[in-house]
Image (cartoon, rainbow, N blue to C red; front, side):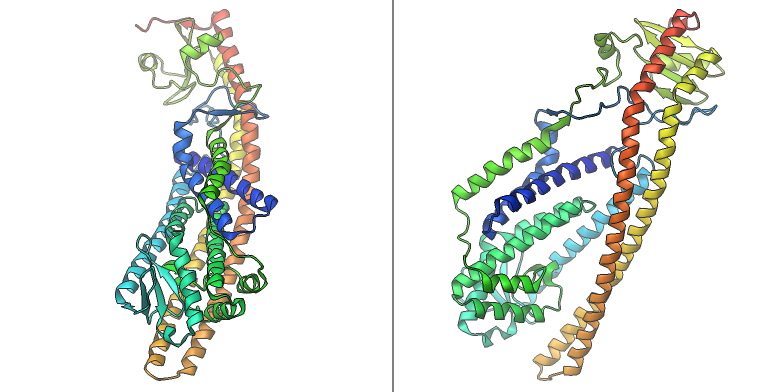
Length: 523
């Protein structure tokens, strides 16, 4: 449960940063893709730093509308219908039950994305090893490979430019533009940042904003490299024609292994941007980086340090003797015992309780007041405590309904994941078939029928992917509904927790006044 709360808190703080950056970019209308890329890279760095900053910097108290619970009750099944004890306030989108299922689901998502990432790295290293050097003079290493159909940059720490084997047929201006495009990626360390963004997306895969951030980093890097290519060639139409050619040839999914030139979200928008552009990116200067840092640092600090602090917050936020004495609370600690189960203010494993339990065969309550230990066995007092917890039982029933709906959403997500796995398998078959066609073409065979079959297979895979995307949208919509209902449960929990705590405090205090509580020496 603690892990779930930590991940949700990280995801929420990260989403606030990303959404704020998106709003800022839109409002200020930044046009330079290199500047936009720098801003999104700063957002990525800030999101990754949140867990460290949240634990190390002073808290920044932010006013909220509703108070937090005064006492954190511990849920435990209790005999005589006392099983609906007050429970820790659940976090949005993370049900308080079925923690194992939630953890397994999260780890499956992380494992799948990390497996994909590691597989891509291994394939890229294998591709580089099978490639051949070229005589092209360039700042970066340039190699050629028959396993790719479009130019790409491979490698994270030591990236190399990879060209398809037909690069010798290109015009010199086209080759120079392509090399400028790929060299631009290397100069900005795009492969490394996109690798880091992939890790961030894998850790927060359940947050749509992590996927949005990754798309922005990839897209802005492509736009900035397109500007570098246009600047090198001086001919927008020629470069746009080259990009269109590579997009059409990009059947193989090279995006797992490297930064491919044909990698873009919408080919039409990219071509229109190249042709219709009037300005080219000038790159980032030190002043520009300082400006981005000055803009992003305060936002990251606030998101990492913010903590709720309501003006009407109950004074007792953690139950222990010192805090309660400082606030003048009449009851220091208490535990309600029923059979083998307990409901406590946070001290159900007290040595005092261990001494008392063997003395009673039935139910009892133990508490401390003004340094004195008391026990109560009166049935009416125990019944009053049970009645005082009625609002908590209502909250637990609400939570149970939300948990069932969350389970249904998890099952839907599992179905989508299986469909995506089938699409990935089919795509792998298309890639293998395309390599066979490429090999036959290099051996002198036109193999038009083979290419037609590959194209048909790719079209089927694209249709399947479209269907999976539609199903994922349904899952997202269902999750949004569950999140809304979970928030209602959280709000109700916030409301009833201090009410229950006050009621139990009064019942135990009155039991002393009415002579129903008995002092006991536990020394």
